[in-house]
Length: 119
Image (cartoon, rainbow, N blue to C red):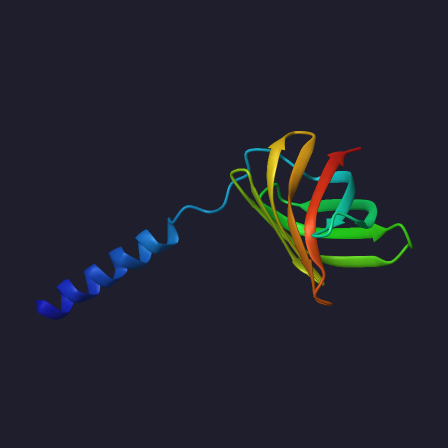
């Protein structure tokens, strides 16, 4: 009997773990956005477009900067919180359906703030 109780408890715990809430997006950011990245010193670091695809809460992005250099990575949105990972890391807030802003850092050590507007 104790083995059966332990097994039932374990199965119940696994069921609850599978029902854990998944990230959900308050806004659907999929599509093309124009962005500007500014350094911590206030200078423009980069501008271009970033396109989000996949599900509203997670997917892939392709960023093409002013020099036509392409960066790719993944994004997640949880509520209004945006996270990009790849060559760059962006931590931002989706303010509304047309505006995202936050901070960024690059693998080369550069960092600053960014703003993005839906196209």
